[in-house]
Length: 427
Image (cartoon, rainbow, N blue to C red):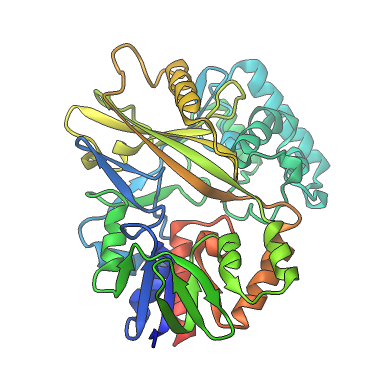
């Protein structure tokens, strides 16, 4: 007879861990990897701690904020964001569309005049794709110097293919006064959802995972191969079957669909319409102190990565004394793994061109991390496909959850919140 659990969670990402922690009781979390956390893991290399790119907690919801503080206790620090853009050979403050001060006069004037023209036209609501919306909202200058090239690098598709559903809080929209002030002087404002963030003092982001997983029935090294929706059983790679009442999953939605049997062809076809971008994440340990920045965006085409950051400014414990830790990210089209050796050389050259690596600051440690599924692409097929898949699965008490389960662009806090909500639903 197979083991039976009322609630089975596939994947030990933070959304499933949060839900399982609230349900406990007759629940089990199955994780294919050797330890829990999914992308919220930290690798330790020669005294450095490297996350799978930057993972920050914004904690805008009081309930989630209180819960995380209870979980981590004194191992949680709050930071005021120091985010920048490197373009035209200079650093300007984030968000680009509200800080033209410091740009070459020609570029600053183009962006400011373009913003005035867009404000005068005032029709961004008519736009149906991101490229058109960016031009209508911010003007041709901002679109040309930041919005279009940066988002093309991040999502790996033409921004004209992107819908507007993902924008929400992720693209700040400064008003006229903010834009004018940001053009005339160096203004450090709090625009955007991430003006402040929290991060563990010790242990990297995986310390949150360890706190969430403590006391759970968690089995690692257990890869699910098939899910029998009719008989409510799943099969593990080792051959064992587990019966379930409710099933939740934070693994990527197309992978979940491939596991399920039986399934209508229409649902499988919908899953085949979903697209995504992977991220190659190169981490470096460098000698000396880090500049007083948290992360930097690279919109220009001459740079292959879209962003780099100084992780040891999140927590000094991420690097040994006298050193600092840097991460750099480059997207690639999902399912098309890049030549890692060639990409690594390119990223190192780009960091040198940006002044991050110098003759006195050469890497003493490197750590390559690959994220095959990182950013969900919001094209016109994404939303109807996700709705159809989730509707079919949830009618059978199979609940996709988290950033990749729900196939969305969301934050760590959103994943924790979804876990809490699902726990209440399962009750």
